Image (cartoon, rainbow, N blue to C red; front, side, top):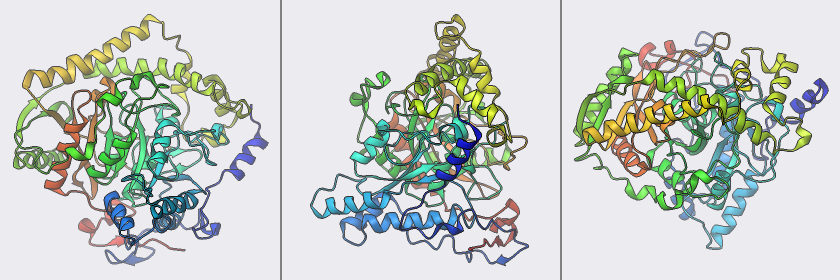
Length: 562
């Protein structure tokens, strides 16, 4: 086990790394966001969106490199400089735990390959952030945000990270997250980790980015990169994408390999892309998808995967039947109003709307699923931790619990580890209680849930609100989650695509398209057509509170730049 002295060494050695192109580190962690009472500027004058790559898509970046207008090195440098200016200074979003010091070198290599006529495809030279529970075989740690793994440096990439590099993408670094993917405490604050601090929502800084892929979604929304990878067990891609006004794709379980990803539960875990546009998400998913002998769940992936961008058409909704799942409405009247506008937009795009529909047995389904997660978390995490470097001193959930107790001041100053303790009490996966819970959860979410609704009404997809407007971050009392629709697809292992739909008091609200297993081509096409019809996404303003939202208050906060 680690002692206090080794923890101090970790904290000093594993601080936020910076590329040689980034400004000097003296400013890191410096100025904090100011209230409008400290200094006021008119809307649009704070400068945070005076960025030459603002809202630039992957395709835009690729065209500029192909035309010789920009190099990958220049593009990576611009994003690194923006991260330096805004992540630990300025609005202090805290979306990035650690930058990859080799990112510029990797970008130069991409430029050399391009000059030699060896560009690898649409991701060649494109910078991407990956969540800090995905292994990268570079100098950055893979820690799930925890100090317990702050020195864990894997020797190889996770399967998804390897696919990114093979496609020519440049991994910028590790995105902040809800520590242990938000499976430590029922009173946690989403987006908080002991290594990364509290990630902020770029639209309104005192609001929460949701979890657990909070840093990935907030960074993409803030234009720190064109795309990022997140992971989801239930809502961890969909919820932060909703709260941060971006596109998130939770793929079918088994489309994307989980090798090298710190787990929660093998019956629900998957990685997926987070981007600002559906087209960019489709590009990333095309690279991520595929079979991996190290993950038996992906046996069908090569046969099922598609070149997803080829299915994106503006008229994709014409002649479709879309079901409105009213079970997930009613938690906020303003969200319902956004959804009614979204439903009308679907009609305008040519869809036939089947409304209302209900998913029964939600409480029983969710209770069974949580029981499954407790069992699988203990089993899967113990298996994962048993494979890492023994010198780290953490080889089991029991070790992890003990570490948190010994470093309570750093790890548990805001909330505890009651989920860890509950999981530790569970028996093996041969327990009848686990087997029954797994059967119940899967049956109610899939065959008797999504499948029954879609088959019974001849539907092409289901829709529901992805979630509500972001709540105020509360480190003392934890999250104030109002509602969302991620559970059926997450528990069944089916795909879910969230896309920006509108705003409530300046805070984004997303629409989720979900459906049968392996229906990513349809869902992405529908989301693309909806996106083209509504064009709801707008870049964040980085105001401090809802009272500062321009259309509400007529002014905006000015943020210190020094």
